[in-house]
Length: 168
Image (cartoon, helix red, strand yellow):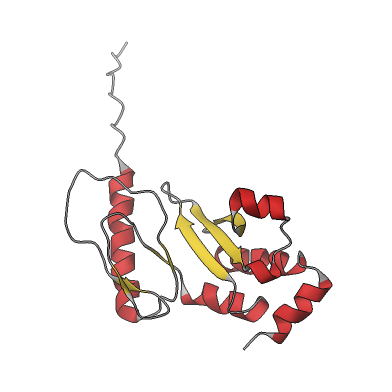
């Protein structure tokens, strides 16, 4: 009989640092292309073993530079903004928070107060009407389109007519 050599299991790599570095690279590419319209700035910090004083600088829709150490900034693809403008209108806000594991992202539509169906008690409790869904990368723009359409369809007929009339 032959002796079977035992193999040690390969060590798991820490992909969070690699994912963070890739996101920084993607942000730099998006920044240079000028396709950033909105930013999500209230996201948790991504910790890294490396420290740096440099954070990427992005511009929001008003052209204001945003650069702080307290915030990690997530760019929103131009196509998502265009979908929201076409299905809803430009008054609706959107936020994208990318999954740390890399499976997808949380896509949030911020419903303006004038279109919200929230009761005064709900408004007091949460403050803002947020409609969030997790979209897998495999769904991509189709998942964003589907969720945006569902948010539109959840509005009352009166609100839908106002939303449509205020599209530009």
